[in-house]
Image (cartoon, rainbow, N blue to C red; front, side):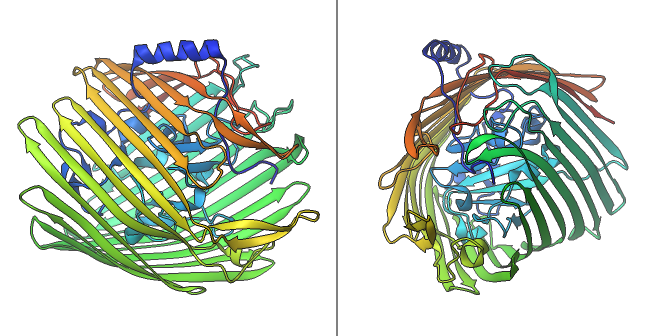
Length: 633
């Protein structure tokens, strides 16, 4: 394709950085547009990092929860933009042209080390080199909440769950017979030099749902059209056009048995430019995704039995100087039984099957069949243990064993609690179909990549304040890379790198409910690869923001983000360059009226019109504004 799949962040002038830092001193915390999350409920937050609902104080992980309230306050933004403000994330491309490829680096990892799940079902594209999921398909209006589990999680979730699992829960049907939601917004889409404030970004979504006795239903349609920016630093415009449709039907036979089926259709078209040589071009990439599936759950006295199945098919067409067509399909089935012996012991035993298919001139496929088990023990004296194991059985390379051990200890006192936690977990990243059998550098003898992640940290919740800090270290073996054998012809292929390399870092978060009306939050991440050069990943990144509620119906907020220096490669010279640090300030406001049925929202991103670079030669957005409303009836 004509644009790279990795991206960085912003370069800034010294005066603007100084002003931004002054703004940080004023706002002192995290995104108002992005904060109405579970941190508002500082007393006891329930998380599901073990697939069981456990009080946060008894969990050995730091889990990020993005609630429906936070998503509503970010309407018009993409999920990539929202998640890019979370600790340890760097999503390159999220502030560029709307159709730009996205690279999500978590704790210094890459796309293929992050697993995306929707309603408990793994999502990926077997035709992609990284076997990853394309976030440009996602319509935020269809999402109820998002939970992010960082660190190695292959024991419970399988392939790719090496640096993070992003678990998306879609909207559920209302208990009313019929309910409808309509959201629309319009905004500008300009770089730092344009600033003409022409309307160029349009989002519309409608959702109808309800329940009739045991039967429930949900149907939704969403669209986005964005224009105004060139993919590269050029003159012409490269529009992005996306359409999403979803349907969910289900029946609750009793309090014990629930069965539902769903269908999704997602498609987008993205214009892009030439990467070699860098310049304007009339290239177009079109992608289409169809998903159907069935979910069922049966609850009994001490547990539950769940079955999730889905078929996902993807078609991609690239119209450029190097045209290409790709077709892929995946079949997923995950069945598991959760059993609670008593309030101290929780267990889960499951079996996960995935078959991946892609067409690279000829049909190619592989399958995985993984049994797994996990146990959680919550003692009455403060000690908690989360441990499990998984046996990955791959049709191409055989079997691979992963495990996790995650203890924590909780100290309770009159106004809160404190806990110390640690983890020792392994994960794996299977070679993709493209790397095994694809048209460029295929190697059918590849082994899976292996990760060993260690974490140690502490979290304290006392009164109106909650904060945590942790240190992580990840050892990477059998890394799959494209190795050039002949630098004159650039002939090469995929191979497992023999050398090990390590990534380590520190993450910290704080939430302070100063008053009932004022919420202050902040986070910081330090990431470093000790043994290997890495591009477009900042060593230092921080976020801060404040949110103030004038009343239950009106709130305003400000957010600040600092991204440190990064390395990037100038492919016109094949020399590495340092991209300067940058600072971004965002503002937002929300107001509810007409008996809570109508919500008005507005925000301004990059208030200081900061000029920055994500990838050398590619466009980024300057100051932009958006207005919209959400109507519910």
